[in-house]
Image 1 (cartoon, rainbow, N blue to C red):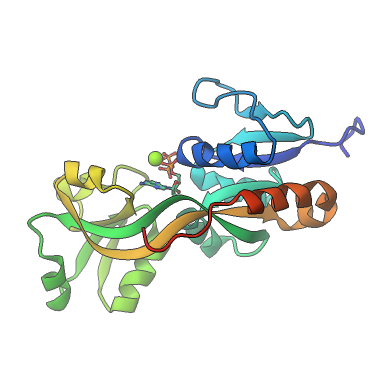
Image 2: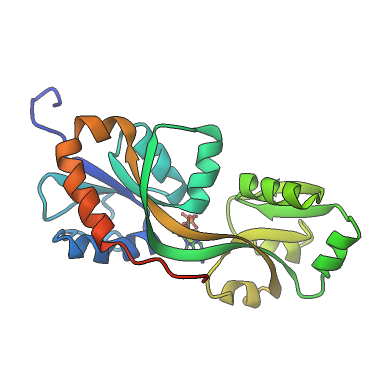
Amino acid sequence: MNSTNTPTPLTLALSKGRIFDETLPLLNETGIEVLENPETSRKLILPTSQPGLQIIIVRATDVPTYVQYGAAHIGIAGKDVLYEHMEHHPGGLYQPVDLNIARCRMSVAVPHDFDYHNAVHQGARLRIATKYVRATREHFAKKGVYIDLIKLYGSMELAPLVGLADAIVDLVSTGTTLKANHLTEVEQIASISSRLIINQAALKTRQAELQPLMNALMRAAVPPKTAV
Ligand code: ATP
Ligand code: MG
């Protein structure tokens, strides 16, 4: 209850683009319509056909933060984003189910003329540009390859083209962006899809409202597929 004694609506955090687009059919299947289109509306809080449920639109990397602090009770986030978030913020998030939406893979990519496997074999030190520092650090540590990590916030494909890095670690779905930038995928690090995340405290305090939504989303979830 807030100060005026009206219950705050249940809040679902989503990012615009892929995750919103692929969550919409799941919500529709559970009988929930979103009443504004985030691509055309400037609103960041979107009402739904269910008066007790609203959607907030935040950056993909911010979804776990909103849910962890309880500003949103529930959210949907990629495993890529969750893995990086959990390194510095373990706990506070319950992750009941993989919704198998927004699927892609996290891969190493290099310019067409760079012999990655040979460089690794020779024990070369590699400069890797990425937004996914934890996943990248752990992947190369496991391989026993020394790297210089260059943290970027976007457009990783550019880094090898202008000599900032030898390779990138990025998300790939069709490979079109890599190809357009003369890059080749040389190693897959992980399969990525999006998970439902729930604020641990809300799970107890808002259980009566959360449980039906969680159950409905789990039922609507896309069945798992084998490798992308
Ligand atoms: P922003 O576009 O705001 O800088 P972002 O690129 O992380 O952030 P999106 O492009 O909306 O945000 O991607 C959100 C999520 O979609 C990713 O975290 C990932 O889990 C998933 N995803 C699926 N396929 C891809 C892909 N080919 N490229 C990027 N993300 C993808
Ligand atoms: Mg993007």
